[in-house]
Image (cartoon, rainbow, N blue to C red):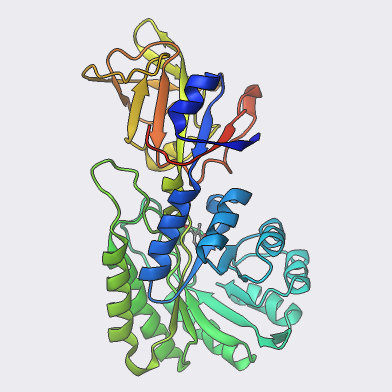
Amino acid sequence: MGLSKTIWTNPTEYLRAEAPENPVLFFSPAAVQSVARRFLAGFPGLVTYAVKSNPTEEMIENLVTAGVQGFDCASPFEIALIRRLAPDAAIHYHNPIRSRSEIKFAVDHKVTAYSVDSSSELAKLTEMVPVQIGGQRVEISVRFKLPVQGAAYNFGAKFGATSEQAAELLRAVAAAGYTPSLTFHGGTQCNDAQVWAAYIREAAVIARAAGVKIARLNVGGGFPSHRDAQTAPNFDAIFKVIADTARAAFGGDLPALVCEPGRALCGDAYTLVARVKSVRDENHVFLNDGIYGAMFEFSQIGIIDRISVLSETLVPRSAPIRARVTFGPTCDSVDRLPGEVPFPADIAEGDYVVVAGMGSYSTVTNSRFNGFGELGMVTVLGLGL
Ligand SMILES: *Cc1c(COP(=O)(O)O)cnc(C)c1O
C-alpha cells in the first residue's frame, strides 16, 4: 500500500487526475474524528479502539487527536504499534489466548490489563504477570459468553467462558490479588442494543455468584457501521440501553464501563473505489478488487449496499438496477461477492464502483494473492463524490 502525502478534496478530484488502474481506499480524517467524538461524548465510560479492525497509522493518529486514550490490542505487533504512536494510552491485551513469549512481551511493554476465559490461561498469567506493574495494579477481565444472536457473527463460538466458569475464574483472579473485571464481545455489526443488555444483566449475575465486586465491565465492540443504506447506526440509543441496564443490574455496585469499538470508529471513514475490468458477455461483472482484497468481509457478513457507479468520465450511472454475479480479479472461484450485486444496468468496462463504509476489516485483510492487492490509500478532505 502506498500512502499518499497529498490531501485531495474528494474522491472524484483524485479519479479525474489519476484514473487509477488499481483499487483505492479514500480516507477522511474528519470522518474518523467526528465519529470518535460521538463515542467520547456519548458512551458512559472509557472508549478504547479495537486496533485489529484497522491498524493503519492514519487511523490511530486521528483517534488520538480526537481524544481516544485506550486501545484494545491482540498481539505484540499491535502493542508495539500503540506504544510507538500513542505512548501514554492504556493498552488492554484482550486476546484471551497468548503464548508465553507474547505474555512476556506484554509485561516488558508495561501492559496492565489482560482478559482470560479459561483456568489454563489464567495459570499462565498468574505465573508470568506481576500483580503490580509500574505501581499500577494489573487488571484481569474474565471474558464470558452467552448464546445470544443479533450480531452479524458470533464471537462466542471462539472465546468466552460459561457463566459458571466465569464466576470461578473471577474468584480466582481476586484471590490472586489482581483487579477483577468482566468483559464480553457480543459479536460484530450488531444493531440490536438488547444484545448488550442481556450480557450486562448476566455480568451482574456472575459477579454476584462469585461474591466479587468487579472494578470494570467492558462491553466489547460490535457497534455497527453504516453498511445497509437503509439503516444508519444509532449509537446514542445503544449507549442509553447500556447505561440504563448497567445501573439497574448492578445498583450500588456499578462498575466503571469500558467499550472497545473497532468497526464503528473506522468503517465509515473510508470509501473504496474499485474498477470494472470486464462485463463478460453482458452478464458477469469482474472488478479489480474482491474477497482476497479489501472486500474479504463481504464473504463473511454480506455486501455493503452503499454503492454508486461512475463512468470512466465520472458521470454517475443511473439506469435501473440489474443485479449481477460479481467476481474479483483472482483466478480462484471463491473470489466472488455473495449473491448478486445491485449495479445500474448500464455498468460498463472501465467504470468506477464506489463503495462507502469500507474502513473496517479491509486494509488488514487485503492480500497479494495471484499478484493482485495493490491497494492505494489516498487522504481526502471529504468522502462526498
Ligand atoms: C474484534 C473485537 C472487537 C471489535 O469488534 P468490532 O465489531 O469491530 O467493533 C472488540 N473486542 C474484541 C475482544 C474483539 O475481538
